[in-house]
Image 1: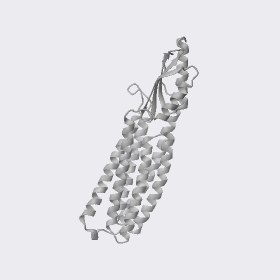
Image 2: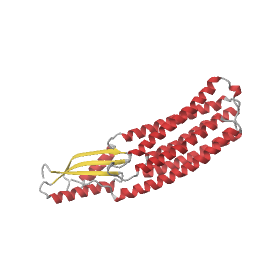
Image 3: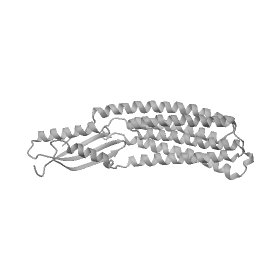
Image 4: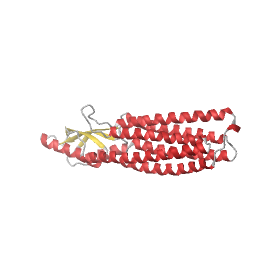
Length: 306
């Protein structure tokens, strides 16, 4: 006994979800486009392979953010006949694509760095100029600001794809630190440091790709909520004055939403309408107290003893 529905509060949240995600993503695209051009020109003019690698990393951000936008829009689509439970997992798919793009981009950078290091022709490597050093500092500051900005809104709307993009910003900041060290070392008379910096950038990119992929895969596979959340739901349901017991409580996470199935005990002498009203109240209470809950199924059993 119960109903499948999405509360008005959840619909408003989904509207805000799309609005916030789109705004943050478009700001990210603009920032990455400008930063990519700046770092690429700085790398070419100042003869720094590390900075060129960092520019390629930022260029991949533009593509990855577009993937995030597509994923967020698809995930926020309303349920339909073919997809009665919604499209939340499509956001996880977007995060997986993003992880793959990140890793392949880093692999190309790492391969070139290893080639330069193994060649042993360090004397032929050009020493970077001051512009490359300045570009690295600008990149570190800009990317760290974008990390905190994106992370704030990712937590606010609970978006895994947007959080993946935030960590992408952080990986950029860390890779730029590597570039800064490498460029500085090369300018001090160790040209190979520029190539070593490119290799360090690959490590950061690979780590970020792995974390994003693992998080997305965990959300693709159904699993229950954490024990704290389940306990809160249990106490809320049992706190209803007419609920005499709980025979079953199951939760599962679908994308970034929670689905709840609960079997409650009520007085077996109640009429069907009275039992139905109790189930409705339990259903409403769960949705009101847990905004992430999208679906609630309440089944009523007669109490074993009254």
